[in-house]
Length: 477
Ligand SMILES: Cc1cc2nc3c(=O)[nH]c(=O)nc-3n(C[C@H](O)[C@H](O)[C@H](O)COP(=O)(O)OP(=O)(O)OC[C@H]3O[C@@H](n4cnc5c(N)ncnc54)[C@H](O)[C@@H]3O)c2cc1C
Image 1 (spheres, rainbow, N blue to C red):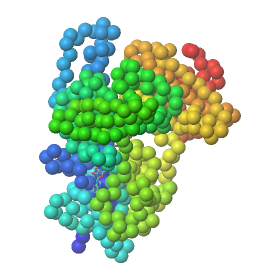
Image 2 (cartoon, protein in one colour; image 1 turned 180 degrees about the horizontal axis):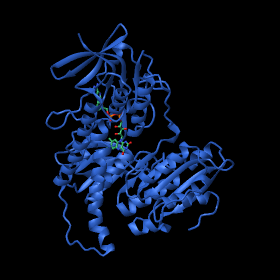
Image 3 (cartoon, helix red, strand yellow; image 1 turned 90 degrees about the horizontal axis):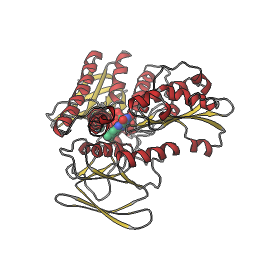
Image 4 (cartoon, protein in one colour; image 1 turned 45 degrees about the vertical axis):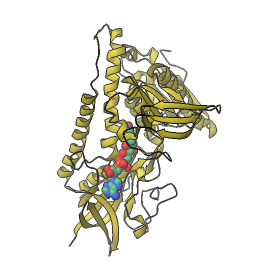
């Protein structure tokens, strides 16, 4: 007889592994199936996020920033380090070590919580009474397990540029971009989204000449316009990325040692760029490959997403889906929260995920982070708002860090004073945004933040000052 589980999760990324742990905590017999293997064929849990996404990119961003600071920043502090050399092999090995620690940590958590882990591809086989039969396939090894509830957490994969195959030698996706063995002289990046900007920053800081080509006419269209404008200035002038918006990519020719990209600029002039390596980062698409969705009537919508309701339920009985494979932002923390919520719904609880208060972060230098509505959204929706803004150049801690770029902007309802959005470009924006998330989740007003004691000297004082600014009473500007 097949092994039986209350809950089987397909996919072990931040959506799936968190769902599995929470389901096990709630007393369900739980299994998680994941196909990702490391270089020696061992299971490597954690999905895109831990293996080829959030964590390795942040490891390389930190290493490259350290290098950049040693070359360009330490002298300001009176520290002369002489000739600084970069050892890419060691940098990549450190990154791999961080990945291993994280993925190993998930394996440990599975053991601790008694989650049964299966290595291989999971797919729907059939409905057997009130159970789902799930096939697990790893090479020639095939087994069938049964589950009362199935959570699909198969994540996303790279959106391919038509006509250009990714070989991860010359034309790279995120996986290749995180493993370039030597700093390329000329690096092309197609797509100025989060991944393109982060990967472009890494290799630029390490010495590559980086050109970023973006089809959209405006830079970071989803961000607050003022933040996007400031970030563009820093990323082009200080980081040194050559970013061009409004381009139309034409023919791409992959040679033996380089890649030629023909493109048309916003004015219609034809351009040609030759790169040693080309990163394609034009977004990601949901991954439903191999789930055998048709066999059981699992609905995939026109965007390739598993169709779910507001509670992540599919139309099939006891089949749920979470994370990148469904609607909503492709963010690890969104996937994890959906995982927790689904496990709790299976247990009959009534959790909720507040999609209006999900933080966004771009880990460039300076970092960019926001939560809630942008000014342009508030204007479009006809919402009357007030704003408070504070520059990091007037913040003592930022000056001491040597990171006094950017600002915090708080937007609050003109009548009720409720905070509607917070936008940050500046040092540790990724950490600072949490205060805004908590405040918004508790329906705080700008005055609530203005009346909270913030430690001095700290970057959080900039948020405090922005809150004071909503009432035109900033103390330090
Ligand atoms: C370079 C890069 C940087 C990123 N940085 C950030 C960041 O800083 N912050 C952030 O929030 N997000 C970031 N993201 C996005 C983040 O990685 C995703 O939103 C997140 O991983 C989605 O989680 P998930 O669990 O839905 O899917 P995934 O993490 O994609 O995991 C899905 C897992 O399911 C497995 N799988 C797929 N099909 C099957 C099957 N049939 N059977 C078994 N296993 C299967 C896959 O192999 C994978 O292991 C980044 C992404 C990239 C590419």
